[in-house]
Amino acid sequence: MTENKTKEELEQQLDEQASEEETKETSQAETEDVAVEDAADVEADGVDEADSELKAKDEEIESLKQQVETEENKYLKLYAEFENFKRRNRQEMEANNKYKHQGMVEDLLPIIDNFERALKIEGDSDSFNSLLKGVEMVYNDLINTLMKHDVREIESVGQPFDPNYHQAVMTEASDEDDGIVIEEFQKGYILKDRIIRPSMVKVSE
Image (cartoon, rainbow, N blue to C red; front, side, top):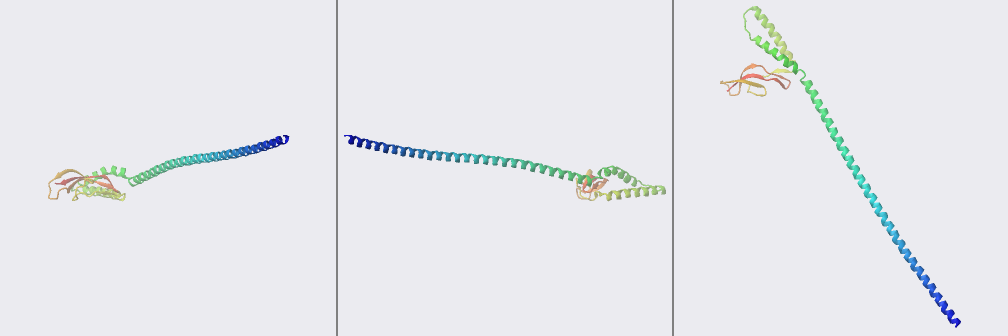
């Protein structure tokens, strides 16, 4: 009877040991599975974090690109405005230099008109003729001086009427074709390519 008990006890002990080992193996397997799952979760978290950081860096790069583009546009606009400013100043300086004698010419035109009126006066005495000759010499010197500074008379009589160069104050029936200048009352003048004063004329009709 004692031997039977001993056998039963041994078998029970062996069963318990086997059960314990099986439980240990099951627990170890479960632990390993949990560890694998945890590792997978950690890896997934790491990937998500890396993606988030990469996205943040991409957004930062895009923002910096936009800032650079904005500043570049501001620079280009400012540069263009400065170039336009320089060009306008250069053009103004060239125009001022080109027409720098315009004021003087405008002041001299009434004097020239008076000389031309004086030259139309007629007289027979020697003193008058001498005076007329002196006036003519001064007039010619004045005209030659103006020509040296690119001032010239506008051609009028016999020319087609041009409102850019002529100011019509009268019209008259004539054997000429219509619109031809047939008489000049006051000479017009041009400085280089700028009209200082148009000619005052009579036009055929």
